[in-house]
Image 1 (cartoon, rainbow, N blue to C red):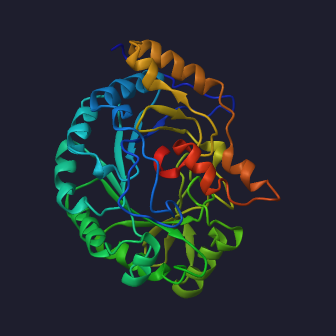
Image 2: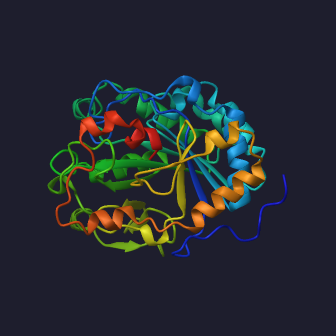
Length: 346
């Protein structure tokens, strides 16, 4: 493979193609009501899923177009068998500067150390409540002990960083801010609070259920004292803040303060559909091109051309909609599983 270019592809808003999120599997073992509220889904056919070799080939093509950061997602990525083997395969690509994973942590306990040894740099784990009954009500499964075990295993495995993501829902878990920050402090992880988003699977979303960045900061400042910013946000989704005792936390304000203008990431589904935005209606079929025999250079040229025509600002457009409501109803999601959040990755 030829050396990657000095300058990544840039879209029509001058946003570089720097980050790729790869959903390695669409299935998940939880049923979080802000993402997967139903019990039964139309899963992607097994034969359509990209093999590890195909994922590596597509990553090589994205590298040629400028990508330097790769994040493995799902569904629940740890349901993909032998995931450490994929991590080791991607780690062989020298241009990848950051290789990360987002997981619900139910299977992270026994896999944290193998993933780190395979070359995984960072882990982000989901934890939406520390209260067993509340956690069970949210995810429809009684798995909080496994999640906590997985997070603690990641904390001792030697990753460059551990982040803990919490989706905040007004009236449900917005009273756990301090407890979650304290848990993050205990395990050496940085908590990131995420505004409840109206993405594909959020069929119960409403604006009234959003607990905003402003409200998060106000409540924490009232209870924990002065809060200061930790510097510019850049292309990262989370704004970072510091408490008086030095503890840092993040807020992803995708609903009230969309960061579309600096978004440098695109998404690849487990069956090779490429989406330029989390809210995008249509994707591009990279699997078909790869299986038809296109070279990495040809795929990179297609990716570069697609990105250079990008104008997507899905979250900003949603924020400007005075009639904003649920993005898709259940029947719409069943007609096309690629609309689901768990299919195109978080």
